[in-house]
Amino acid sequence: DAGVIQSPRHEVTEMGQEVTLRCKPISGHNSLFWYRQTMMRGLELLIYFNNNVPIDDSGMPEDRFSAKMPNASFSTLKIQPSEPRDSAVYFCASSSLRLAGGPSSYEQYFGPGTRLTVT
Amino acid sequence: TQLLEQSPQFLSIQEGENLTVYCNSSSVFSSLQWYRQEPGEGPVLLVTVVTGGEVKKLKRLTFQFGDARKDSSLHITAAQPGDTGLYLCAGGPSSSNTGKLIFGQGTTLQVKP
Image 1: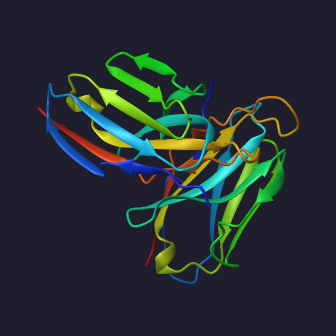
Image 2: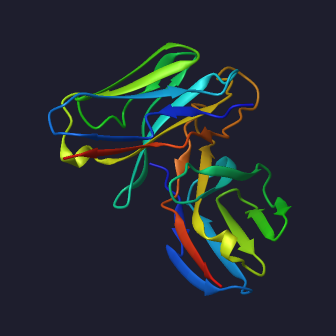
């Protein structure tokens, strides 16, 4: 089975440019998470979706960040305009979760990440 | 706000030594996972523990969930250079059912040959 797929793997852009990161979750998983990882702050949850609906976006740092999940097999994280402090590795993770009743699985499976450098 | 504190933050040891990494919280978790992350890659799930007092073994790695489900430990026996990486614990909050995981800040392990 293919794992979580992210593209691009590396992105170098200039300050002010728009950046779009892409993610394809594991087939059959109904939750998708976007994280940002830096040396200073570690792994931070930005936003997550359940059944393509955004559930919690409290981690999105600013209005410059937006995320969409138009269908169960694709999500994007967009930064517009980008700034040097956005430089980080961005991870997408997916899991299979039931929100209503019964035990829930919290195990998440991560993609390889996108290393973003904003100059 | 639920937090997971990992200790130590950094660990550098010689091949063959044993080590233990701790993950502590004042909150109860419904489950706890351990991940390992190697440079340039995403975290990879190692194990999930769900029952207080549960012990799971994965080759030379032993994972334990505290009786009160507030803490966990990871013990590595006879560490090898291939064990080098960032170890992250992550808890599923018992107070909500959102799917969100609370991650510790990680323990960076270096095993020297």
